[in-house]
Image (tube, rainbow, N blue to C red):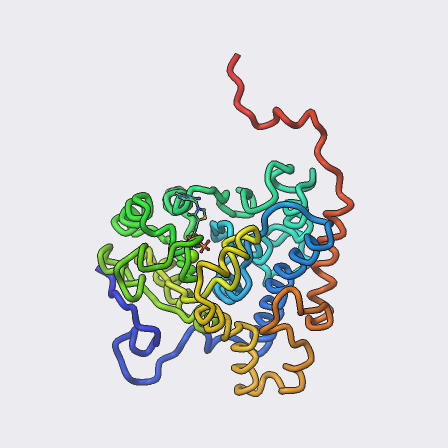
Length: 375
Ligand SMILES: Cc1ncc(C[n+]2csc(CCOP(=O)(O)OP(=O)(O)O)c2C)c(N)n1
Ligand SMILES: [Mg+2]
């Protein structure tokens, strides 16, 4: 049986007090700068869409990942191109951040292009879903992205399936599934993780524990302090990460990835964070009523951009002046402006937005496409 740990410190996780190497020790200064840019990009994606909707240029519900970006960026950063991911509704940036290290503009990288993702949001013919939805109900077998479903926890059995298939085909790939804590009381969550544990399948289950599932707080979901302890019952490791700190997320996730890649099986990584706004933008006003104001103020305090900048300053990678140049942190979509973001980030996303706005709607004859019809 694999060692089970819920410790947040890798030194403790390895059962020793002596200094140990962390996966992040291998990150270069350029990696840190890239992680910061990716955090900016994920944040900008969020606020730009809200602004576009307010300007009347976009319709449909938006599910914000504001304040949770470090989880997506930190967990995707160490993956290999052929690894699988399964994002859900709060992970929209994951579709383009996958294999981002291969080059933002690289058409061959194993992630969706910004044009594809923006087309999906705008419901255009150029979108992977060909305008059947405006959000995360997309996937790509070619890019190794498991199709997102609305059935919470439904991606975990799919991930166990693809890893089993890859194993049978002689591939040493892993699957990373993203899940809110609200999905964890589903029967299928337990069945799939148990199966993965028994078969030692390389499935890394990320729990984005943002304290709320729509209007349901965590104490109605599970009776544990750290959700990660659930792993004990499956005989697999459970890690707890500070979801506001991209480097801590990277460290814990990479421990899980290395565990999986070396044939030891699945694990759970609980990333503690806070949902900054409503479940979707349709829920923003209600969320202000069902969540105590102090909790919301407290939960939004540690902006992941600020946490990484502080780290980089203390390591001598960033000067205070450089950190202050683009002060997007701790600002809501209503107050932040393009000048608060690095120009590279604004230009990259603007390209995707303009492509999507100009793209055609699907032809009406496509209505019956992909629909099963029995004669
Ligand atoms: C099996 C199932 N039950 C209920 C829903 C409706 N639903 C959609 S999102 C959501 C809340 C999800 O909360 P959580 O998993 O914590 O993710 P978060 O939205 O907080 O990121 C619910 C109840 C669903 N999609 N699937
Ligand atoms: Mg949640």
